[in-house]
Length: 104
Image (cartoon, rainbow, N blue to C red; front, side):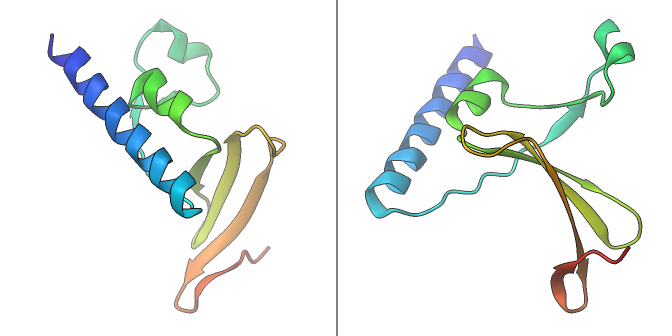
């Protein structure tokens, strides 16, 4: 019913964004919400959060980054899925001077 039509609309929108990115040679950045996974499998997962949007969001994205808050102004960005980058993490800070290197 309604879920299928939302997924089709989302897929159409993402295809349009990808076409614009290819045509004009620009990067497209999409932010996504995460939700707590409350089923039985969440007990065994190291991180019980999962992105919304389902397979459509996952398959439409080339590189997926997972950002989380560290201590104080520190943030952690993890390469979650990418065809050309290894899985890795980078720390940075957001402060009065903008985005800077994280302080140890």
